[in-house]
Length: 136
Length: 136
DNA sequence: CTGGGTGCAAAGTATTTGCATGAAC
DNA sequence: GTTCATGCAAATACTTTGCACCCAG
Image (cartoon, rainbow over all chains, first blue to last red; front, top):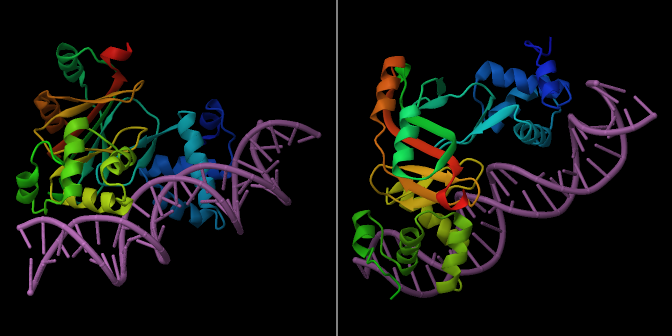
């Protein structure tokens, strides 16, 4: 019952041993979508009453290196982490601070950049800040 | 000769006293376009042999609050700072780490978001990572 | 069994704060 | 003259490291 989504295989596919702590981190990211270090630590304390922040940091860093998760840098806020998934972008509500994924096609942007410069794009980070449906 | 671009008035218009340190920070941002805290500190030390990092932090934070400058969060890198200017986006070279401004219109993105969600967009942060002309 | 993960404590880095002095206006 | 900035030192916050012990495979 520690893991709701058997991330065991997913972790192993990324060369990560499936420890209870890592399964719980995976579950938290799956459940909350985006979470910062401090909130993740507080959440983890509920299940692992003696987990160390160092363990969180070590695991987050390793999971990033192994492309199991991604860091999302958010304007004015602390970075959050999410499970690696299909290409998408982020909506950040300035009021409630919630982050929502948005799946859109930004080919037009890449085309525009190509005509303006010689830059070879490999990755796009896009965060749209504003007001979410609930906060309007 | 401390300031090359008389940022005195600009600073005052943003409710900031025009001290030599602030003029020098303004000059550095103008000259380099984008710079992180550490590089800025090293640069400042050349002109102010006893400037404190605390002074840099206090000024950067105040300048951001007063909208004289902006923080740019860069994937995998430390944040950089730039003078506030017309709406634009950033190209980050993964090889040489240089950051370039790009002025394009992203109306199509906003339109797409509007059709997909009820989110009210007020600001867009876009960083395109890849390889710059020189590094290809 | 073996390699790698965990928790703890300590070290290392980054950022902020308080205060006496000094400069901007 | 008054308000606010500066530099220093100290405090706080954030992140990484080293190591003894333990668990996943």
